[in-house]
View 1 (cartoon, rainbow, N blue to C red):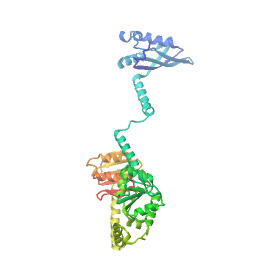
View 2: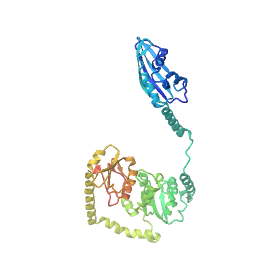
View 3: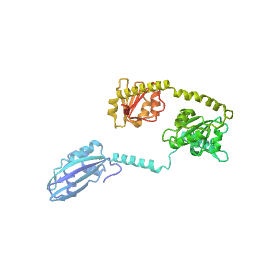
View 4: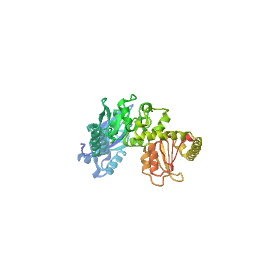
Amino acid sequence: MQNTDTTKYIVHARIRADGVVERPDVVGAIFGQTEGLLGNDLDLRDLQKTGRIGRIEVNIKSTAGKSNGMIDIPSSLDKAETAILAASLETIDRIGPCMAGIEIIKVEDIRASKRKHIVDRAKHILTDMFDENVPESQEITDEVKQSIRIEEMTYYGKDNIPCGPNVMDSDAIIVVEGRADVLNLLRYGIKNSIAVGGTNVPPAVAELCKKKNVTAFTDGDRGGELIIKELLQITDIDFIARAPDGKGVEELVQKEIVRSLRQKIPVEQAMEKYQIGGNRQRTSSQQPAHRQERREIRPRVMKAHTQQPRATERQRRNSRKDESVKTVATEFKEHMSELSGTLSGRLLDNNKKILKEVTVKDLANSIKDVDSKVKSVVFDGVITQRLVDIASEKEIKDIIGAKIGNVTKAPANLRIASTGQL
């Protein structure tokens, strides 16, 4: 009798007979032709009586005067004893009056099958039966802080314009597009923002801007550009900040918000860029001191931009920069050619020898962990501002990719190039 609680292995064997045979014939041949072959300790009859060998299952069919089938024998013996027992079956050469042969196909480890079932079942339980994950302590803290900051949102004027609680008391304010932008800034502790609600800037916001030092912080799309143009026409602002291309202020995380605000440009540059004359109706006596100072310095700034010698010098610098970039791209042409289409990257030493190869998705984390031997990074992907910042921190000299993305700031000692510049 098979004891399913102690079965460790199942011996699977194939049987062929040159004649018509049935299950009792096969079982009788197995017991008869192995009796006394392996000694008393491995006698099949005794092993079956003690439960160390289970019921012998035989599935056999006869066709055209020949018989073929399978034999399954459960075993609770150890590996060596089970292997000996399995090998003994292949000594059987007759079943009843027919010539026959038995071939061992495999020995199945029942415990391995049970382990696989446990793993598969555990995956199902983990993914489908837990209602929700228990939050980490930091997640709980962040959630509490976020709810407090959202509750701090207030409203300005009779039109109930969404804004942060510090808008009235602060000398400097941030003008954003909508309520969601104000909420996102509050989420990261910025409490002096106010929404304009689209391109139709409320008169109350326009008047408030005339009394404050103003940074317009808009989305990196066409709508954000239109809001900037309207603000430049109807009120006074001091700086322009933009979200990365294709992103909205409401989508940004803290690091992106801080970077965008640090990269703001003075309004003089924005007016030249967007070709806006702006609203200059007020007299000097009506304008705050910082506005008067800005008006006084603009003619000199504009004049400096039109001087031919400075423009020529800029052209020479740009020409030298283009040549340097092309040289860098050429130096690493062989590596980039080998990496093309692989979505992989290489970390190289001073002699351009490969120290490590990684996938593009793991590149940023790999750069963070590199030692001082890594001097160059080449990869089949887009060079981003994040990668440039990490490479700069690690004192990497060169970063070469398939394409250069929205990189607005790079240190002078870091050479950046793409295969498109070859």
